[in-house]
Amino acid sequence: MGTQSGILDVLAAIGSIATPIIVLIFSGIGWLIANRLERARELETKLREDRIQIYNDILAPYIFLFTKDEGLPRAREYKGKSSIEVGSEKVGSLDYKQTAFRLSLIGSDEVFRAFNNLMQFFYAGKLGQEERSEETTRELFELLGTLLLEIRKSVGNEKTDLHHFEMLEFLITDIRSKYQKDGKY
Image 1 (spheres, rainbow, N blue to C red):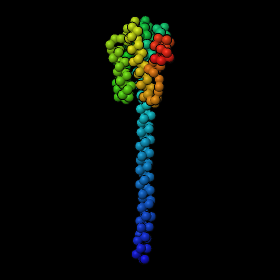
Image 2 (image 1 turned 30 degrees about the horizontal axis):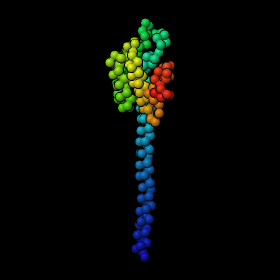
Image 3 (image 1 turned 30 degrees about the vertical axis):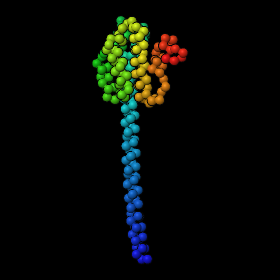
């Protein structure tokens, strides 16, 4: 019986020493995991803020395309130019190319693909046409609406049900009458 009591005493002593050590180890592991998760959240928040700024900069020239010429700012750089000319100049500028480069680094794949498709439309010379065909105009709306939709998803609205034309309704007064049939695009 004495041997059994001695073994129990040794086990109790080991348990009393091991318990705080085990608690300390698990607490440390828990702290490391929580710290990494917090850092990942902080980085994701910063990345989202950077993406939003880049997305705003990428979209800025296209706002000019939907602005009436008389609605352009009165700055000297816009004097005597149409909104299409101003938008095209901005898309072709060095600043815009630098922003596009930043987009290629931190934009989502879907946003960057949609942006590339829109830029290919621009490079084909279709954007700068004063008089675009109905088919070309529709293509521009589809490309820009898709870019806006992908940006929307990228900044946290992944489950959106909006159509790419719905993304442009606030910009284009007659988009529903021209492109909707039976209430659907």
